[in-house]
Length: 275
Ligand SMILES: [Zn+2]
Image 1 (cartoon, rainbow, N blue to C red):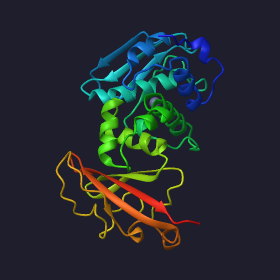
Image 2 (cartoon, rainbow, N blue to C red):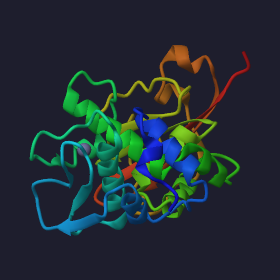
Image 3 (cartoon, rainbow, N blue to C red):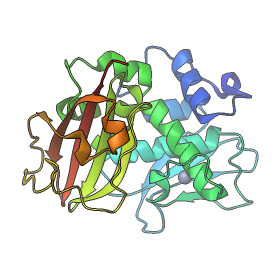
Image 4 (tube, rainbow, N blue to C red):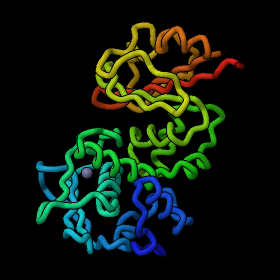
């Protein structure tokens, strides 16, 4: 692989680092060999360990001459892939410095941090490693090129997740980031909203995290089995958005995908009224 750390020297931002790697290796397949990339970037060893202490960790000296990645055993391959990319992020992002002798050990919650502007340093660097991992595994331009459906759909997110070897939730974020349409994906657990991912121009969703989905939504009582999705149906924008935002929405659709363990995913798509 034609990527070496010399060529990444001086690049500080997580996004710019991931972009540069794709620039240097433009022919990387969507499900490229991540271990091979790590190895060309001075991380020759990735091993699975039996532990409940962390989800993934990277061992490196203070100068970051070399690294070794450890991932908790027994995880699904797509989850392991994201964890490895996250640790590679800690290794490459200049400001993520290990304290003497301590590994960077990341918990499951760290792998879900998204606020790269958090005041808390720990949360911020975890979010930065996630941003790097997402941009490395799901480069927006490549994801956009791989989109073939006529309109945004959960079936397409599932197909892309498989193609890029990431989890459906990871791809939901990558999809929202890459899509040119106004879309949002909500992850539900037992009917309550666990996470919300919105594309740049998608309006604020009035339902707070942790709250149940609105009774008038299609997602309420969807009763779908794991892996089964509903049709894409028109819904009332008022169900999800404020009155003010609704005035600017021409039409809104909602689609639901049943998942295992009480999880479900909701895709919202709006068409704007002409201004
Ligand atoms: Zn981390």
